[in-house]
Length: 292
Image (cartoon, rainbow, N blue to C red; front, side, top):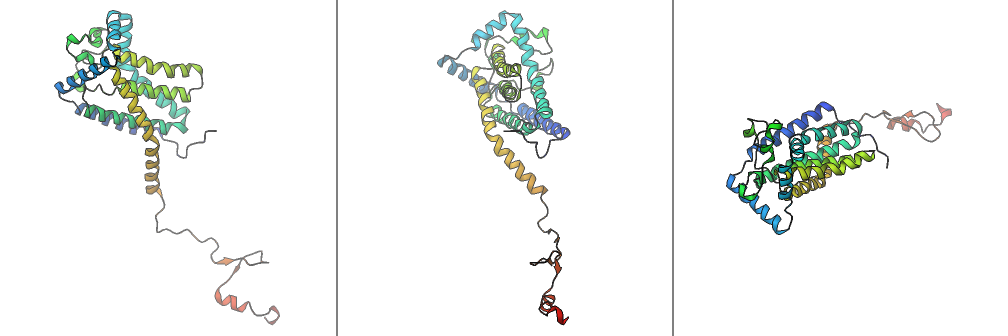
């Protein structure tokens, strides 16, 4: 089916303002949603026990690999600290410029899922593996390799700014969720095989990175994908609702009447030009033309 042009192409400045407002609200909400440390640790341990019971404990071997191999650990830390801030906006801009028909739905999907993730941070504060007791066998690679980057020992926050982040917002992993969104956009709308490959590789790579750096559990990644799935289901109803609201506030006032173009003129059989008639004129017309 050929793509049709959108009825109202988004304006870049309104889109930028919308994205900034939503992300600012998300960041502030994430910061305010800090949970109690002991509760967050309990949730983290519960997730770790569930993974061991399900034989899904991939975090330990990946974390040991990244810890013992700086050639893997350092690039992984850079990827964790920066890619979601670079790749996600870049794909939004690409869609806005090259795929305007698809942009609005894609943007709405991303924003809804992000806000759903905030609900998860609020209801289920979770301690990431790197902040568990050392006896659990995890090493914080961000702290280990902090001399290579701008971050310190508090996740990907710049040194001295750790107090401005919520370190117990591990569930769900929006690193993985946003990467999945990017992958779907590249797969759906990319026109080259390379973009299709990147669409598959990027979310997989991100999943390995978040686990190997001990920032997330595997189930955090699964929850991030689930949040994106729910966001995708809500996108179409949200767009319909937004369209109804827009129509309601932009429709013509109900009291206005459309002008009558004919101004009372009617055309009868045999007439080429409408004749102006009134009820009295109609009575006069009954007189034979010869008597006039």
